[in-house]
Image 1 (cartoon, helix red, strand yellow):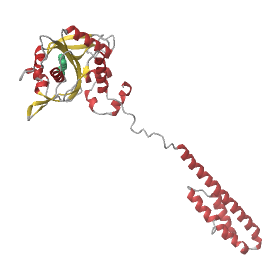
Image 2 (image 1 turned 180 degrees about the vertical axis):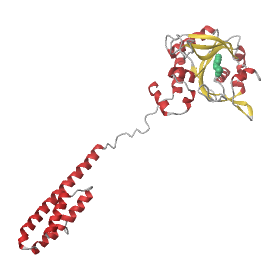
Image 3 (image 1 turned 30 degrees about the horizontal axis):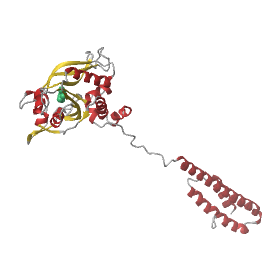
Image 4 (image 1 turned 45 degrees about the vertical axis):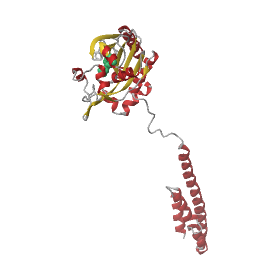
Length: 340
Ligand code: DAH
């Protein structure tokens, strides 16, 4: 009996628990109603007289140590549990997806719209699925005219009259057909061309078309309007340059360049050492187009222009690969958060 009591005392001193449950079963085993200690106390009267003293003292020690141990371990487990509970804030936002941001194309499109709104241009929109008349014929591209080759068009096989619009110039036809001058409008939208996808070309992109029709509109008005736009978009010190060009729907026609946004015209590899970057096409609306759309070309004149939104975004944000705009790469898109 004495040796059993000594063994239990040693066991108690050395006892370690991994959980509260283990502490509890230890307590029941030793201190419980049917526990070891009860049994040993019951044995007390059977112990030889000369051992009674030592046995009694060991039992008392065992009881005391076991109780101490149970209290100590319970306290330890409870306090560590409290700690985990108090450190957790279950109300905190999970924020797994982060906050979204605007795509660079609408950011630039809105900036273009804002600039032209300030000088009285209103917004008009048209369908992306167009007919031949609005996309080509009314704009002075006669059937079989080689100018149609300038734009690789998606036609619908069953009905060659239906196309995905190749430019937003189709919207200027719709506006002229449905309103009387003065007209001052811009038409933002998506356009489609049958191009192999590469860093510099895509099968769809975005344009903003502009149209101004009134009495006595001159090329000087065109130049001044586009200069205002360029300086608002790229900075007050921006210069513009108009180079003669050709479009079936304008006469005369021009390409407009802006002084290089990187080197301010000094010459660098972005502007290929020319000091200028091409950004849009423009011209005086061809009298045939005015007449096609029911506007008397003897009374009215006007100018038009069209620009690619991706091109402006490329210059503003220094993006060299067109494909990035439609790949939904979050790392790319996250960079425009501050441009909102
Ligand atoms: N539609 C032309 C294109 O997609 C751009 C353009 C050039 C529009 C001259 C115009 C313009 O209104 O006058 O390439």
